[in-house]
Amino acid sequence: SLWGVRVSRPIGIITGNPPESGSALWNHINAHIRSLLGPRCCGDVSMPPIIIHSIPEMGLSMELDSREKEVWRGLGQAVSQLCSCGVRFLAVADNTTQYFAPEIRKICETAGVEFLSVADATAAWLRAHEVRRIALVGNKYVADRGHWTAYREALDGIEVETISARGLGMIAELAYRVKVDGVSEAGLSRLRDILRQEVSSEHVVLAVTELSLLFQHQRRKGRSGKVLIDA
Image 1 (cartoon, rainbow, N blue to C red):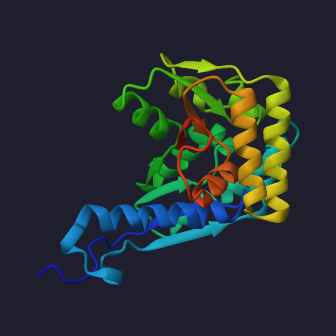
Image 2 (image 1 turned 135 degrees about the vertical axis):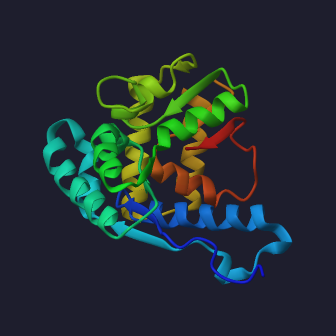
């Protein structure tokens, strides 16, 4: 009686900054489903249906202040397209474009789709684990918790370490390197160096998808001396 697909409506994932972030989220979902079902997992047929929509315009969010309209044009169309496919949940595998969460929710609510915000989910995890102080490692739009970030309201009540302008520049440089060269041991080593030099907090939220990809590449845990939390 346990055989068969358990979820009929798909999960929608929008990706593109970088494209690999969507496949990483998909892998996380499948691993979590296997963990939840345990011995009741029937393999392939127990996995939820997934629709991934990768749009190149997502990469423009690295210059969000000057390309807001172009980014939203591509992202808004992708949200509408996935909603028209009948998805049950929708997630954007990116941190910077969580800025558009209010607009995304409006489209989703009209279609009866639940939007899952990366910023809100991360904040809920931190509170559940009683983490009261973090470093938010992101690009300049995310990390300063100013106008452009969804983390401003989400992290209300949690102390957030301010990353120096030098540190933000190093993070941005590393993110662009991963976009071009992909994940490598050299990139992971560079991430560890940045965290040691620029971050004092024990708990570090990785709010750059390129850094999340590097984190997954890590074979030995704890080498940065930090508790790394992949948003």
